[in-house]
Structures are given as structure tokens and as C-alpha cells.
Length: 139
Image (tube, rainbow, N blue to C red; front, side):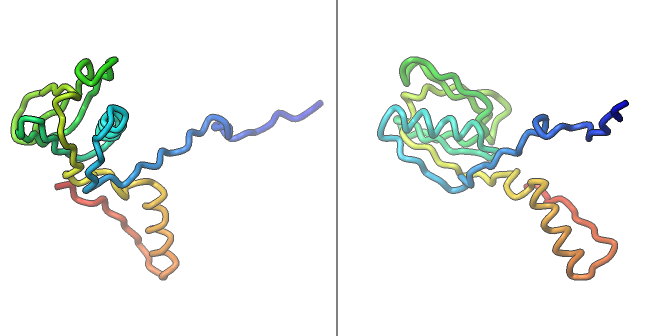
């Protein structure tokens, strides 16, 4: 009678790989075409820091992008953010945006599990004992 397999509770095909995020901190994307505007605002949505949006009328809004709605045209598309200096939500049409800057610190940069393991292994290889790796302080 064949013996039952004692497989690991997570099969290889059930483990999702982590997502590698681009380092966008400080980036000012070109917004010359509709496609460039759409791509830049999609990246702003995935970004874990504040962005600064300069409107075509010259006004600036700095805040965290928490939503975007892609329509047929730039005038039908909106980005929603929480301004850094106010407790409200603001919607801005893509067509109103003249410039986008990734100005805030990416709060999740360098905080992957793989980074933690590398730091741990380096300390262990250096002969340290009672190794303690504390998280970075957020601003």
C-alpha cells in the first residue's frame, strides 16, 4: 500500500512571488501624450508616498493618491488624492494636470522581507548574537 505524501502545506504553485516596485522617489515623468499621463498616474496610484500635482492653472496639490478612474478621454479620467495639509479627499481630472512629481518619501522602500533576511544574515555572518532588526521609523 503506497504511503501518503507529507507535502508542505503550501504547494509551490500556491506561493505568490512578491512584487518589485520601481524606485520612483524624485521622478518627474513626461506628460506629453495622453498615454504618458495615464501611465504616470497609474504609477502614482501604486506609489506609497506623496506626489505633487501642478494644475494647468498653476495651482499645486501635494498628497497621497488613493484612487484613479480611467475614462475614455483625459477629461473623463480622474485621480483622487488626500491633500497633505487637509483632511479631505480631492478629485482632479487628468486633463487639468500639467506636471506630476513623486515628491514624498516612498514609505515602503527597502522594507521587503528579502531585505530583512539579507540584513539578518550579514549580522549573523559577522558573528553577532542576539540579533535584533528594528523597523525604520516613518516620518
